[in-house]
Length: 232
Length: 153
Image (cartoon, rainbow over all chains, first blue to last red):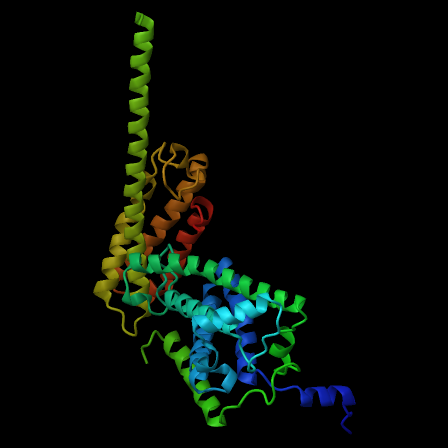
């Protein structure tokens, strides 16, 4: 079967636009969206036998993302987007003045801290879930056998409350995306396609393939180890 | 102050005092109830933790099931009239506990029965039967909590 040629405009646009997010970052992002939604639903409906595996998957994704944050492509690295207060203020001022403040491809100085906040909160949330015990002492996280019933209940309460904090940060994240959209800066498209026409060329510097494999293995190991309660 | 006024004042202060001490009683009853349920929760958790190990210890399992078998039949006595949310105290017990006593007693009896069955299996030394019984026991907690316990959030 002959390949249907893509419209020229699309082809050149896709080719010309610099890449800002690599595939692992985009997959991480969208898997996380689905898993957080699933975790929320299963928690609300008492489906703990599904809630737990979702938690292990999120833990694996987080392990991968932390690795990718030190070993991944240039826009995935924390060293590239975690900026000091001066840079954040400078960016915020430029933004308030309506300037474009383009900078290098990747997270801007404010968005970088949003990523740090979301990742930290999620890590704490998963960590608390591991030790959580339900009110009946029946359902529990895989590490809850190492703590008392009372400590497990406390972890469950914090697990519950911290999720509200997570939802607040997610709401802020969505509001920011809407605000940029009003300024005709589309953030959603690049998270889908990986490319952004207005980004400074040549875009991100990709990471060597072995680093990706190492990250995937690390993420799988983390998920499996936690699922087994670290008893391997 | 005339005599009637004086008597009314005394009656009022006595009833206020009685009311306050009643609320205090209800609060301490609810607190004791809370402690009892924590003991049940701890035993349930201990049991399910033990059953999840590769080789559960019969001695440990028996300790937990015995505790549950002791506590479960007492459960209805932890809910005397006037110790519910109507007393204005901190409790997760729903008013339905006292509004639907027949259903509540039935759910409590189901728990006591399962606790007794699982303990009998543990006393026999039948760990497989204990493990098989555990989900039904846990279900009695959930069933009763669904109807009679305020969901926390």
